[in-house]
Image (cartoon, rainbow, N blue to C red; front, side, top):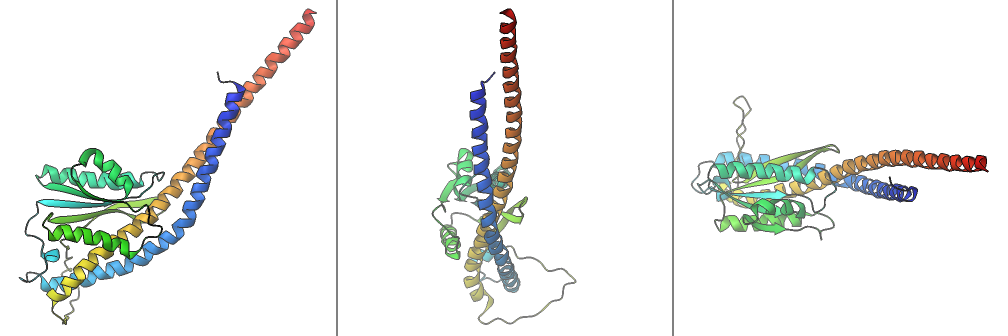
Length: 291
């Protein structure tokens, strides 16, 4: 059995850990509000961008001059999985849930005889994926030095992806991230961004005719690359909010667990101390009677 001194050290260590987890919880909570506001502000623009492009693309569908980002390469053999995760851990299942979704998609594609490549944004996803797919990871981007996410970061990623597409390195690109719902709910999401999936309108939906200036193909050649950057930027903001939400929840659970551990350790310490005092009293009384 551990000595009283060892028990006191253990209790003090657990209390120190509890202070750290509580501080991390408060920091995550303070940063979550700004991250959540940024993610929510980006959603309407990203959704409207997709809607406008889908409207233009539906008019240009089947056109011989349709951009490759819309029409595709005509093949479905090489898939690039753009996996966006966090740079740090201590956030529960946030990173692993995104990686799991990407890994499941990769396994399904490989089973169909497809070739899979990975573009990792974020250290944690890269560390997990390289254990199984080290040779398939074509690029890794680390954002630890970025203090505040901006559209320029998404543009940089989009340019790298588009350069690989222009070089014929892949046929389909799918974006993986976690959509922020609440502090306790972050939804792993897969979104195909190349070629763009045009949503079909319902049969009873009202139709509106538009005339475009310049022509649809020319508009799309400028809008499609920007849309990819916008969708990646949205994913980065959603991930940022999801990370702080998951970390806040995880550190809250860790703080509660530490409190419960301190309570149990204190009980054991008090019982051991009481037993030792009782033993010493019995020895003193026994000695006095013997005299």
